[in-house]
Length: 255
Image 1 (cartoon, rainbow, N blue to C red):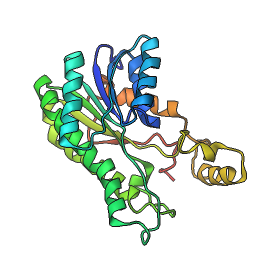
Image 2: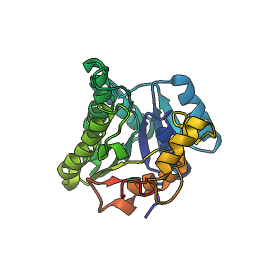
Image 3: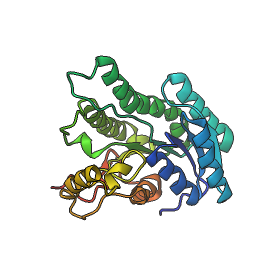
């Protein structure tokens, strides 16, 4: 029931920490991959590594930040592999600042990247999914969709709460069409952006210990901790699950 061999996945934000995990996990599981991101160089490096492992990977250096780009991404996936079975929207951003210093334009940029863009690419994929009578959509939420943060997250937190709303709305809207829509919502996991938290310098240790105190499992997350939940949501194992947010966070949001 976890077999996804021969299926085709479109992954946006494929050069980000979760996006690369998604591309690697699904490629190694036998999926055809259309990997998309704004950074062409890093995108090709990831694709080359997966091709060396025997993966079928095509790339397109585009962000899902307009109707036109989203249509190009879906059309390119179908042109390359004949169909679209799985959509993973791993693109997004954060901009940390106190609300009095965060301009409306910066706030809107976070909302656009984290809310509008996933909505646009889901909209672009709708026709292909409905024609096939099936589809799997995995969006990226966060522990911060249900938790606040003291360090200037007045854009990020509401953007991820909105992602959860999209998941619930489309899960209901598309259920009759055989399309499931779910999200993965991690807490801190190892990535280039969080590497300092894993370091043994004073600042890193302080931040790490503060987060660890809230994680019942007793460690920070690793990228591979997201691979299993992703494969579950992308496969038939989750065929009776939609509109849900899966939280691989070591129990962070449970306490």
